[in-house]
Image 1 (spheres, one colour):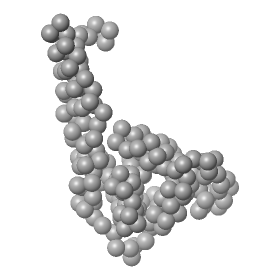
Image 2 (image 1 turned 180 degrees about the vertical axis):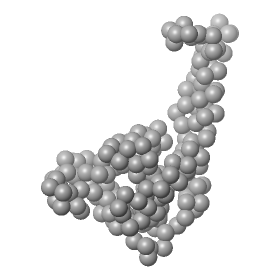
Image 3 (image 1 turned 30 degrees about the horizontal axis):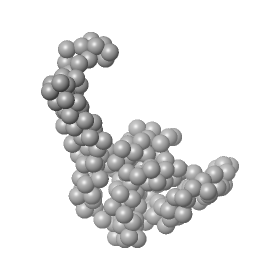
Length: 196
């Protein structure tokens, strides 16, 4: 790169940067798997570690016939806990955002509000936080996610699929990226400028 300020960048600089970013993005499935493995260290007082919990949630989603995207979202719904427990839904949702539909993004972003139905009253919090989203088209899917898959996934006896089972799904979902389209657009613009 030849610039020291972004407003001095040339198309050639940005093409190099875009290629490097695309190469890094191609490693997203491995990065996500590494983050998921870090959840194994987090128990946080539960009877399962957080990796076992997300694997069980994803297994339940898969067996319920959820889309591949939703199964991966179920697998990754607590991945934000690697960084912060307090705002883990927002972190997980933002990691997923470039790769999933808006509906799936919203379900993961709000899953704590839906989970609250099952325990917030015990903590003096409002257990009806999910009511804020009743008008949303994705509301019933978020209820299913929270009530049937997420809150039930702390069971040592459940036949949970291993992380390796989900690797092909991670590969497919995280292979999709808007960066590849951006690189292609820059290459086209560069070719048009060269021909002009």
